[in-house]
Amino acid sequence: MVVDEKFERIVEESERLIHYHIRKLNIIDRNGDFFAEGLYALWNAYLTHNPEKGEFSKYISWKIHNALIDEIRKDSRKQEKEEIYQEHMKQEELYLCEDTISDIYWWEHVRSLLTNSQWKWVYHFIIMDRSITQTARLEQVSVDAVKNWGRHARKRLQGLNLEQ
Image 1 (cartoon, one colour):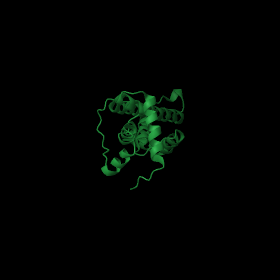
Image 2 (cartoon, helix red, strand yellow; image 1 turned 180 degrees about the vertical axis):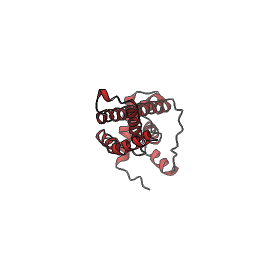
Image 3 (spheres, one colour; image 1 turned 135 degrees about the vertical axis):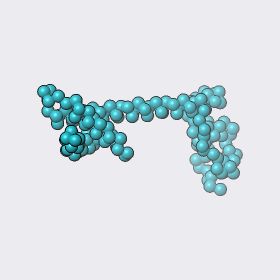
Image 4 (cartoon, helix red, strand yellow; image 1 turned 90 degrees about the vertical axis):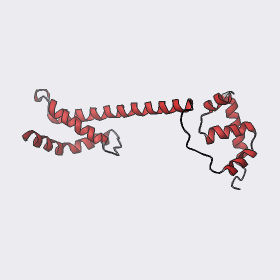
């Protein structure tokens, strides 16, 4: 087909333009999704260009640039939603913690050096990777109390040789 050959020629001429916009927008395109989006924008520009309204080269540049910005925004919204979901799951404790205490004896040694409150901080903050707010809520104490536990635990553990 004549139309396909014409578009293939346009693609060959415009590949550098797509890469230019990807670099200009500081996009790291590891799996080629943004380049594919640029090609799709090029196809749409090819189909919708009106020669009376301006040059084709300026039109495709504008379409590619805006399509890449839209894709960045879409990825950003998707990432934000995933982060909100993960945070919600952590707060509700519906997630599975894959971290396990691998060296029970070492952790028992650490626990023997700390008070119960300091151990609670180590357990929640270090082992379970919970925030100070989450720990305070679970232990039903103030955020300042949890911070104080951590401060004293770090001070007590700092100078000790725990590699026994």
